[in-house]
Image (tube, rainbow, N blue to C red; front, side):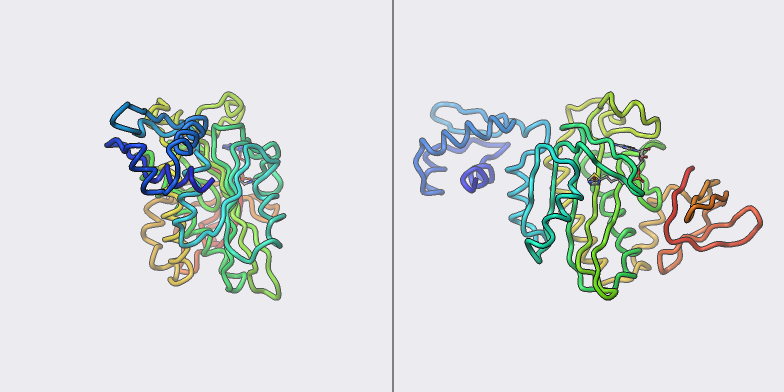
Length: 319
Ligand code: BTX
């Protein structure tokens, strides 16, 4: 509700704010404030109330808060709306379903997916409240061929957000994964609806592993932020979302206005595939190669075993 959002934006980590002060600022009764504070507590916020001092935000929830998320979306220059699910088959599915309802850019977020999917209809493990499952719907009016560049800009935005929020050093595994310590922390996929070669909507699905989960043990290539930093105490998912939305907005605008060459060096610095032997599967055929460079247009240049330089747009890569 709006009152929840307004109260949350008034609450401070450093100092107390009195109930009267909140009531005067928002023009509502102190009872309404008390009730709203209770419901924020149910959402996982730890809010301290001290007689004669007022309220104080001790800790954000351990997991995402839908209220904090809608505050962020309210401030976003990019997204007009967020659809939040505690559980859903797949946020991609929901995003596609909602396409006809609005012409705006919006986000779908879920705490759990029962049929999360990766590329080529592979399964994406999405247990409840241990990861974040997001679909971004963006509406650029540009040719569909630009989508290669989109993936490159968005991968840098995701990687930087993880680094900034969790103090880690993630790497981009071209084309669709973010790695940490040689394991997959995040996968994303970009789907497009187009008409006569022009993009109508980009539906970008992003899955990020945050907390430890036993179901992920069966995927030896997977890891989570908690697995890497060793404890869940310092993990603040809400501030990650803040960094994430900022970076998505920055890099999406750069994508619309700049050539890949302007982020190419930054991107290469984050890439983990150069100089390594790769097993590449491209449209059904498999070959070994060494990644040489990424060119100005975002094509990956590799040297295969016959000594030929090949340019690839998208493929499956094993390190
Ligand atoms: P991908 O096809 O590159 O990766 C899928 C592969 O990754 C699987 O075959 C499995 O080996 C491995 N895997 C599965 N689950 C996980 C996991 N949680 N962590 C690490 N590795 C895993 C990459 O696909 C794109 C994934 C996008 C997922 C998002 S979540 C929000 C949105 N909704 C939806 O249904 N999909 C996207």
